[in-house]
Image (tube, rainbow, N blue to C red; front, side):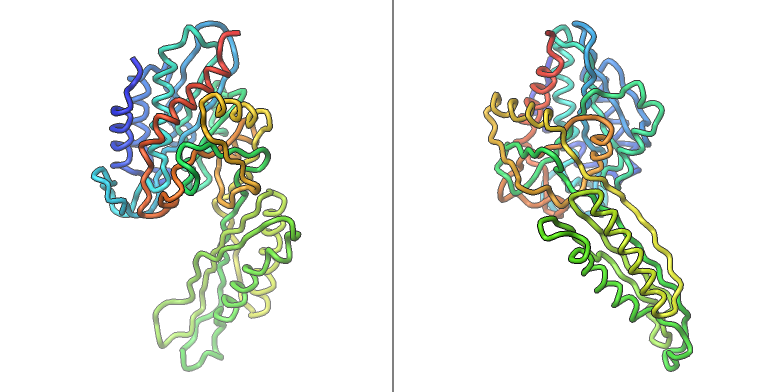
Length: 383
């Protein structure tokens, strides 16, 4: 019997109450595996790419395609100040991006479709992916040998998006979410007494020059009709020691653009800037790249299918002119299989993603279940 929406809300609140960070989602994964088996999955595969879980529902009508639907397991290192009575009970960690809601919608759709197997062909694979926030999860799942038997013909994922009308579908052909990379530049000089800075090699001036240079890179790399962005997110110079001229420093930034090729050029120019800056102040240096997200590029036909579905369900469609500036590691999956990443509006005035006041709106659960269930019925219906 399909879950009622009160039970779905209870599941969402349970997941919200116990958030876990990227790569450390063991308890969440165990609970998802338990719920998947309880709610009708024919097969549950655990340990994919770390803590990932895949719940499979097989149509009994005849052979057919495999459709993958993805939700995310991980939470964020952000305190939960939503004020909800089910607020997270882990200090400094919270589901402030809505992954608890994404998981719950997928569980609800799986439960609905498990009761309709005789009308379906092929397979529905519900992937509960680890480590989305750090860009490690999707790639790790794809590289896991245990994923090979589950390889889909099409793959879809949604993300709730504050700032858009509640229950609207945000659809875009081509690039939906931007590519990005995290940059760390470590500068090594030599400490000296603060009264004799001439005896050391301080990276202070290099840090200032590097910050200014990084923030100016987009104007040199991208044409006027395109967009790129460099955000300096952290810098540290020496230690708090008033008698010491510093000898070590680090500057961190996020580089992003709509297209992978432009991010690649940004990174090459940032590398050259780091080299030139370190050389100018006689410093040694190291560059490290982290959290590499590719562009999330949608398949045109998959977006058209979602547009048709929205019309059938009476959902408003919003078509952004430009790709979103944030990144999503579902881009790795879209590089491997045709499909689409799209948005589900969570309210014009709703607190933004990654805000400590954010909470996934329960009103979206029913829409998400209807949407996923209808998409699977459309794609796996018996001819």
